[in-house]
Image (cartoon, rainbow, N blue to C red):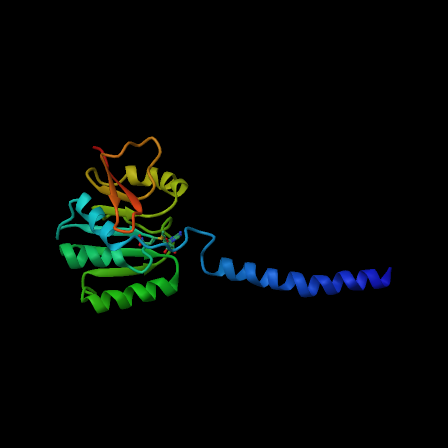
Length: 185
Ligand SMILES: C[S@@+](CC[C@H](N)C(=O)[O-])C[C@H]1O[C@@H](n2cnc3c(N)ncnc32)[C@H](O)[C@@H]1O
């Protein structure tokens, strides 16, 4: 009986410890939230054009990853842009990328939770999140200034019908859907 108990303990130590350590590694990089997946540059540009962005706009990217969308908004269209990102390492990378692109004066990256951040001064909101998160954010979006444009990569907003939908097929054959809504009066 004692030997069987010792064997179970030994088995537990050698086989379960790596599993526990591995699962801790997975959660420590925020992958339990929406994972970091980038929007291809061609799709970024199409999203910004869909929103009819110009230099008077204030764009927020909720979950900004490496910063490519706020950076493109500033670099290609002269807009002011803010990226909100929960992962500090990605915020640091986005700041470096903005510096390299010469747009640090018009782009800001904030480390924080998109559910807690105040983005009420936005004229354009960009999201590449999950459908359930879009739906959770929808009541907040609907309280934004009338006319505020919201653009989503890949996922829609349930029964809130988009004003426009665009399908982009990249040279690699991959298809990307983008959506535009406008906050009503
Ligand atoms: C699918 S990626 C999109 C990145 C970028 N917007 C793009 O389209 O290339 C989603 C990003 O949201 C970030 N994220 C997930 N949950 C978040 C939260 N609660 N607050 C802020 N950022 C979050 C992730 O770290 C990830 O970088």
